[in-house]
Image (tube, rainbow, N blue to C red; front, side, top):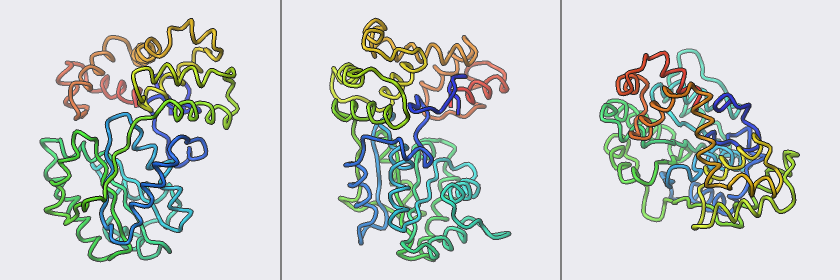
Length: 321
């Protein structure tokens, strides 16, 4: 995927999370992965949860970390991150992990139950970005539809089907809205909050990613960037990815060039300036500011708010993500 017209995804992703295909270059979260894997496979844990602030790397941990890890244990991990067309999202998820395709006319619930029964170690359904649905004032019907599907599948598949509910920290308390229709609620001690990266973790991510992909970084650059990113405390993985991506794009791969660039404090806004420029300049800036002002990013609403034609908004959004 390209970000702002910049070739991608590349070793460092900017906004784009690592997915199942990027598992070999996903580093820095081995301890968190072990904790999460133990949580979701614990005998009594039918429904568990993951939370954390935006940009902390939840989606990358789930797709590039947890799903491949579970596969090695014989557990089928199905990742769903959007809910407008749940059937299609589920089918695409199964396709990514090479599961059996749905039969003709088979609905999402029956398909999910069949996959859970057929998998040697059972199935974990991962529901990410639930905050988009939980915060949406118009999302109640879709939330009820999802809850009913989960309740039916949970009953039919029994303990072979488990659920991991994922939402941003600011919306975590809203998970209770899914319980009345789904019957699912994480028990105490059955949820994990993903934290930021410490300095050693950040340096490890940069260095190992560069080595694994044959990317040239001068010796000591990874450590210098990590110190810079963590000056005020642990850093967001999103900021690390943006800075490392910008280093490659601008060929700032030596210590001297990095120091002359102004470091992370300048490279992060520079990334956004380049992104906005590639996406169309002033109209793209309007859309980006409107998105930042609201967690619900429907294209139609953005077109009204920015007074831009809907096709223009659609094009800008496709560039951003």
